[in-house]
Length: 330
Image (cartoon, rainbow, N blue to C red; front, top):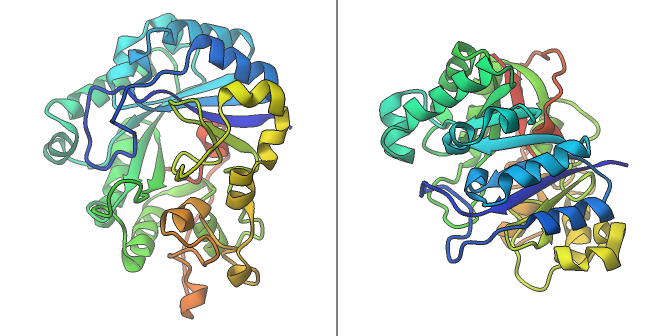
């Protein structure tokens, strides 16, 4: 089984967005040699770069070349900086890329991420399109934008891009946390404006009527944070000892059987007979109650969620396989 790997090559970034989960105490880098250790000890099929701005990593070009030569599908998420900083050659080595846009107007986007960011992300999308690199808009569904998430579909449509939506996780603050009502209203608006390419957000997937609602996190995907720690999900709270890249030669695939991965993949007894099957493990872990229903589970509330949606033709995007997310086609 090939694994979908998410990797934070660095937590260095040119912006300081209020909703970001990255650790800002120290700047860390995963080296080219560490990337080689990962590839020699795990069956890596695809790799998504995220967390910080990858182009700020001093070995980024060499890492991309190494992975490309190994025929590993690569994806890069960026606030626009990295997509404008790297060479045409290295940009075209990426299978697909994403630009982070959380608001549909220049004023709101610039206020949230920094002056000039709206122009930068659009320049980045234009560059990628000119070079033939598939681009998606990446948005975080939050309490401050859920009621206008459908407007972001229009932004993606104007660029000929798909839209990928992640639910905000309270890693550092509850400031942008969605209420139950906001969560489901956001998805109603999203599905009302676009067709669904894929959905791996477990509780939403259950509401769409799928039987298999397991998250890819910890099952078919592995995450490496900038400290080199191996975790089942980018949002997973590290509150004790976890394995690192240095442990891989000893662990090999046994890393998938580690305590952290068992905890992330375990079915909560309280939700064993619920369609949500516990939903998002990281959300439950961040709430301090792994043995619980997902906080957005409608069935535990006796609520009936009706989502009208239409499937879109399948699209081969790297991120569809390595994180709980929803991808739609405008």
